[in-house]
Each structure stands twice: as C-alpha cells, then as structure tokens.
Image 1 (cartoon, rainbow, N blue to C red):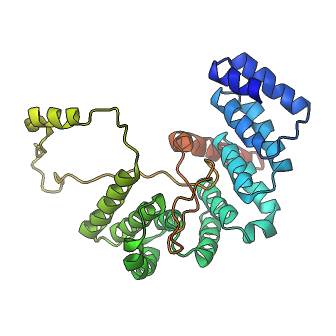
Image 2: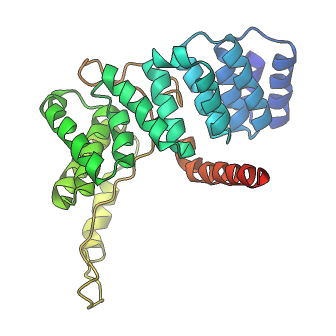
Length: 302
C-alpha cells in the first residue's frame, strides 16, 4: 500500500497500474481499503482495474457505508445498471439500511426508474423524515400535484429545520422547498428558499485564507457599470428581461466520499450523503451512455 501511495504521489500511471494489478492477483485481504485502491486507479483513468477493485470490495466489505461507496464508484464508471442490480440482489439488507435505500433511490433516478426511486426515497423518509438530500431528490421528480403534497410535509418541518446547525442536508432541505414552490408557480417564494439554500452552502463552504477576496470586491467597485444588470433590448412583452437566480446542486449520493466525520449531530436533521465533484461532472454523460445502451438492448429484442 505504501508503494501505491508513493506511485500515486509521483503521478506514475504505469507503476500505479502494476501495483494495483499485483494486489488483485495476490488476492490481498484489504477489505474496505479496496475502495481506496479503486479510487486511485480511477483517478489515473484505469477504469477496468477500478472496477475489479470494486468487485473485491463488495466481496470483503461488511459496512453498508463502504458498500454504498463501492457501488457509487461503480456508477461513476458508467455501470449504474450493474450497481442497481447488485442492490436488488441484496434486497433484505437494503430495506433495513437508510444508506443503501438512499443510494438505491438515486441510482433508480439516474436510470429513469422514477416509480422505484420514489418508493426507495419514501422508505428513507419513514426513518429519517428530515433527510434534506432525500427530500431534494423527491422534489426534483415530483409533478405539480405531488409537489403540493410534498410542500405540506416540508412546511411542517420548516420551523425545526431553521433551528438546526448549518449542513449540506439543511441546504438541500431549503432547495427542496424552493423546487416545490416553483412547481406550484409560487416563483417569488421559491427564489427566497433557493437563496436560503445558497446562503447555507456559502456559509459551510471553506474559504482559502491565503486568497485575498478583497480583490474581487475591488474589481466590482471599479467595474460597477459592467457588473450592473442591463435590461434586454428585446421589446416583445412575452420575453422576460428579469434576471433570475440560478442555484446548481448536484445529486448527493451516500458513498461517493468517505463519510467518516459527522456532518450534523442534531437528530432532527441527518445527512445521508455527500456531494462529490466527479459524478456531478460526468453525470449527464453517463446518463446518456446508459440510456443509449438500454435503447440498443431494446432494439436487439425486436
């Protein structure tokens, strides 16, 4: 393992691949550390080796958290269907685990199995009713009627959620509220919650103390005319010229990163996942790839 770490630090891809291959061939009893080995292989673009590391992890891991981590990485490699099928095969274990239920809901969502996704996410909420990530994902899938019902649930939780410490889960909760209000055409209220979501994320995002943020303010002050909103030159009344806030939130998935530190301790708001930049970056590509593969399979049966 020390050799692998040294090779990765020196960015020696061939050496990394050789060491990972040796670990696999030697049947090394790494247990949950296989996930870390797979992450290193993935970071060097060695996706086949990463997949084999995931398989080893699933054979040896006992923790639901690490199983979720391995399956999340498998999905990142474009094998979302395979990850979902694995969860289907361990149904009893999934039904008793909030972590695995949440992951199953996310994978089902990515595959377009919206009914199954909603069922899994609802099962999570029966155990953890204030899971912000789960509520966020449900809100993105809801139609206007479902949004009204979900909005009622969220409104009852709002006063208690306002009081809990800042976290990703809390930000997701506000974003879910924003989504439901947007889908019921209450745009102004929706944007208020989107802003609360953004404020929460800004508050918990670490800032680089070595970076001089005053330079940004100075630039804005010097270029205030450029920074000001300019109305559109279009005169057609059907064209809206009002600027709208945009908040981008990836799909938090339990297992995408090691959740070793407690994000939030208040029992009223538990986080069941973290956001990882890698799946956020490739999510659309992999969804398209998976959709095309399913289309090919469908055509082959005809």
